Every structure is written in C-alpha cells, then in structure tokens.
Length: 138
Image (cartoon, rainbow, N blue to C red):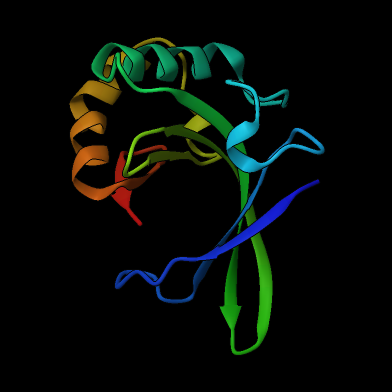
C-alpha cells in the first residue's frame, strides 16, 4: 500500500501525526476510487456523502483511511483508524470520521451534521474531526 505521512503542525495538537493511506494498492492517494472498501457503516457514510454533495455539488469526493498516532518524544504510538471523506479543490477539505462517530444511530444523523454546521466548519478549518458529540478542528 502506498503510504504518505503528513505531520500536521496544529496549535491545538502539536503531537498529533496523521498517516494517510490509500486503500487501493498501487494507486496514489488521490487516484483512489470515490469510495473505499472497508468495514465502516455504509449507511452512515452514505448520509455524510449526501450531506456533503448537497452542499458542495461542484467538488469531487474521495475517501480513504488514515491512522493517527500520538508522538511522545521519538516514539509514535498508534491511536486509531479513521475514515476520511475529502472534498477536492485547490484547498482540499477533509472530514475525519472517528470510530465514536460511527457509534451514533443513523436516524437523525443528517440533522446532527446540519446542527454541527459541518459544511461551514470544513470551509473555515479545512480539516475537521467528526466525533460522537460534534466537530473539532485539527
């Protein structure tokens, strides 16, 4: 698998490193298919995709998985595997869906995304972590 490491120097989490990995072997990160073959809840992913496509109809949607690690000195400790939905453009926007996000019931999920203002947060922040209780910028 093609592995791309990106260290994101964010004021809020200076020790967080995202390792972005395309799930399509032999393809680059943004050459991957529009969706990935994974064990994430496809019904919930469909709700998120539809929400984003309604609000950003002219942007391409790509999906991949990222692994986050926490750095302690020189040691990198694996933290979690996240499903990422990326909107392509000059400045890509990414919604990082945590395992806790997938624990929510699908009923009312679209309404929660609206209440949290996911689309506005993506425009303002670029990368947003979507959890059980709302959003947080990276």
